[in-house]
Amino acid sequence: MMSEAVSKRLYSVKEAGRYLGRSPWTIRRLIRDGVLREVRQGRRVMLDLVDMDLFIEKYKREAIDGNDLSKEEERSSNGTLGGDRSTLDEVLQ
Image (tube, rainbow, N blue to C red; front, top):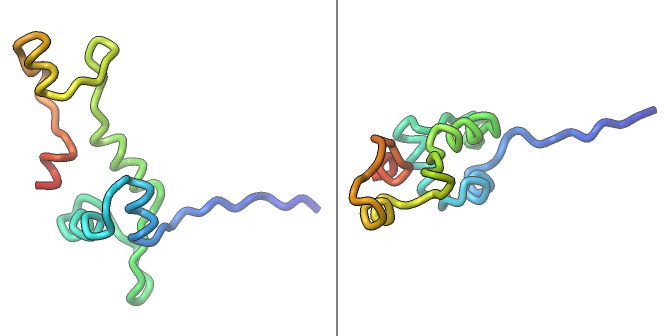
């Protein structure tokens, strides 16, 4: 009999924070603001791995000329901001 490994799909707020590199309070705020969706089981709040991966893809910055530069670095290197992009920091404000 072969046993298949079961991968975890639902994460607690604390685990989701570790996965996304954010505090549990920020995760709760993202849920409240509708940026992340929650899975509720009674009082327990869980986050789906698929939704967290979609969140990462949505806010991932594209590399500019092979380098991922901040807006300040872009300004200092070429005097412009480049394309109009939404960043995670703008969403979290």
